[in-house]
Image (cartoon, helix red, strand yellow):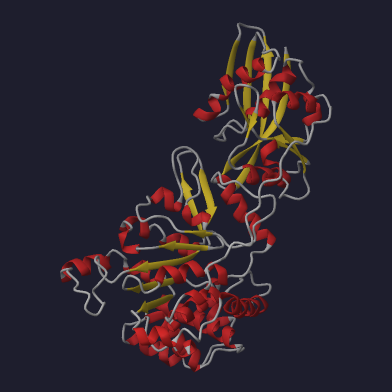
Length: 510
């Protein structure tokens, strides 16, 4: 009889829980029992591990073998427990001493030939190990650089089961990991100067970038909506290392390969309009996976042709837009993912797109146009800070703007300076941008700007909701930050109202 243990990590969203893997060999007929609420992929680990041990030339216990995953009440999913299970089994059967890995978590999947394969969710697993006090992590050799994004851990990469046994015996393991290929940093990026005309829309994009405001662009096809949105990420400042690590952890859970160094650029996600609710907000069978809104965390989520999305899919964004996170409930567990994204919607005026085009010969019936626009519900549109209408350019307008364009670099410098002003203003309060400041704080912690009667008049006329008042105040602060002012004035209040209601003639666009 023999008893040995090892450690791995169970993931529920980004939250990790250390799992103790016990293996016990006792008297009885040869059989393998796996307990501790495993899912189907984990339950099949018995057969994968047996074949991997045999093909690597090591003996499998020829007696009763019980594998227990503690805590037994915690659901466990995935194939990353394989090398932890094998470590406990080989220790219980006396093949190798497991004590040398007592201070390590083991994450990796085994192939039938004994090779150690990459797994999904490695980065949050390693983060959880560090939080729980572990000093070492044993991971697939192809994911060593990903695991080393977490500082303060001794990361060892193994390529085969034989190398795992060498590690258990205290023998050195060769460093065979290849440095992953870095993206081409010299590749041209979309530049705001490529967009001809649409000065007011460019101003709206700049305000959205400076305050991390949600944006709705609507207008005829070909006026530049998609071009503008594709240039929005280039205006955003770099993420902090902590934010970049959080983004990388979410992408690791989605199975996206990480680079050797943290990517400090904000992410950009643009799902197709045929996307389902689970693909957008997260879900799936078993352990829920992150959706497009979590992959856009700290970045931009762009929904092009927004009315083509199913209304229930769009309405599923209501809670994440307000709370900055999404909680997905299951029978035995809940998974919580961050979802503090910047939403950008784009839409045509009608199904054919020519309702506002001079001479466009729109063929859509009024009822069909109304139904098309009603697919974007009022509650969703009320949560969008900026509504910007784009009009087609005439030839003279297009030629007139060719000599007066600003590059993304110039605009990004103004955005960065505005972000710095916000960071200084909210230091110690837990907010980074104007869009994050709750309504009560806008009215109690910050000085009230001039021109609030303009907002009161809009509320009395029914053109502005209570949520819209807070949105306008946040937009006014962002406009003031871009103008270098300490407090918004009546001018910024008018600009905020124009941005909120999609009115033409923005004063900051000149």
